[in-house]
Amino acid sequence: MRLRTVYNQALPRHNNHPPAEVVLTHPEAWSQRELDVLRHAASLAVSAAACR
Image 1 (tube, rainbow, N blue to C red):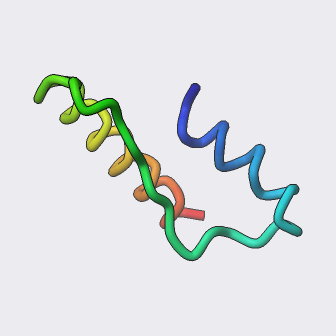
Image 2: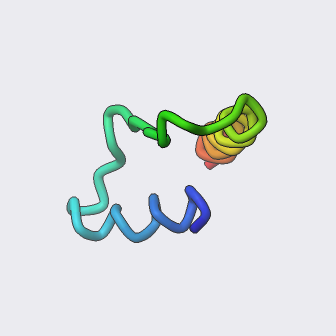
């Protein structure tokens, strides 16, 4: 699931107030490549949120 989708689904459940912070977790066994993909997705989500 895309981070934007999760964000959009969460907003109505919290009176449309954006979160003060977002914490992403991952399995301990993830490789460096998987962590890089997660970090990249998170940075894209932050960039998209800043453009709103």
